[in-house]
Amino acid sequence: MKFADLGLSKPLLDAIELQGYTEPSPIQAKAIPHVIAGRDVMAAAQTGTGKTAGFTLPILHRLSNTPKPSGKGNQARALVLTPTRELAAQVAASVETYGQNLKIKTAVVFGGVKINPQMQKLRGGVDVLIATPGRLLDLHNQNAIQFDQLEVLVLDEADRMLDMGFIHDIRRIIKMLPKKRQNLLFSATFSNDIRQLAKTIVHDPIEVSVSPANSTVDSVQQSLIAVEKTDKTQVLTRLIVENDWFQVLVFSRTKHGANRLVKQLVAKGVEASAIHGNKSQGARTKALAEFKAGKVRVLVATDIAARGIDIDQLPHVVNFDLPQVAEDYVHRIGRTGRAGASGEAISLVSHDEFKLLVAIERLIKKEVPRKHLDGYQPLNDLPGSKGDFRDIKPNKPKSKGGNSSGSRNQNSKSDGAGRSSKKRSSNVKKQPNQATPSRAGRNARRAKAGKKVAPERSGSNDSSARDKGSSRSYSNPNRSNNTVG
Image (cartoon, rainbow, N blue to C red; front, top):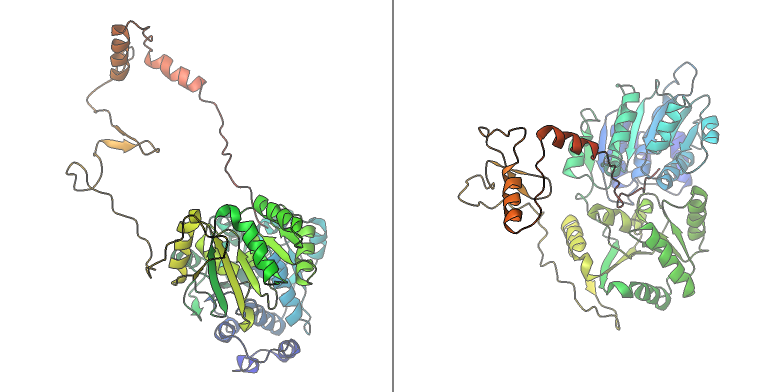
């Protein structure tokens, strides 16, 4: 099949030919005709198979072949939502590339940069707006963008857009949009929960998929090296130097870990930069540009980069830390082996990450080949998966005391910390000035031992004392502030 067979306009075909493409990828061949026909589409395909062009090309075709709505205002005809700034910039570049022969106005907006220049760019409206959710809400609150004339909504990397970190913003945005619109959801992964949630957004969608769910590209050679956690930096350095790797994307689980690894690599004479949420947008753009240009040998990134780095023929991806979410492994290693090119993905796995490894292998339905590096044999080796890739199901609660329901006691309830307390019998009434049985028993034991007995409290005084001392606020020191976009 050729691009000309998909019904795209000649200006688009000329732009595609200029990029050296003649045949659409499988996901493009399946999705583009449905999008041109105006259907809602849910499309799933492996990372690096051309999903971005799968929706940008038919959207540009539609906008260039339908009259622009009359009226003034800061309107957008098509809205593309992405989870990261890097992915927003990548989509914008795709729109500019394929729309170079069309009179299409495009804008890209995301956080981390000043908002005023973005507001000025939206004056008079745009045809295609690419945005991260947080910045889009800020612009809408300042009346910088309106959606009365919106025709198409796209959720790029829809699984991440619909997870708990973004779902509230997405719902707020959808309330702003016209009910009559075309909805396109594109992603590499669609879990069952996300699929059900997505169907509340789309209407009678066409579902297209060109590969098994959550699968990885065959052109990516996967392997892992079992290693002690303290030896990971030495192993990574040895791999880079001895194999003369010139362009390596390394994934770290945390921002501080990424910064620390960059310092360690630079100290060993390996040029490296970090890209993560604490970096300014200017610093992130500079680091990515230098990495693409070959000025920096190693780019250490957190998972914000897994959805937005598009580098032709990136040869090596290394998981310095395994991701907490198994689906992120698919997106990480999908940065290499793109557009049919070959690539290599290596994970450095310590024994404490074994459960994360098991979750990844269950997701991709295959075992990642184990390797060892001479001189770095771990104290505790990693077991094999034994070919068991079934999804883990929660165990049923065991029955205790002959209860057929498997619960502790029908008169018991949990206090939220795994403990249970029996409910007070409904026919026992607590008198206002009477100590509770537990307090009375405790006082009797203390008196018998010759200790001071705690005074009994009245019901009214108890209540006021608790109310008076209960106005404390709590904060969670482990709460993450790694917002994206």
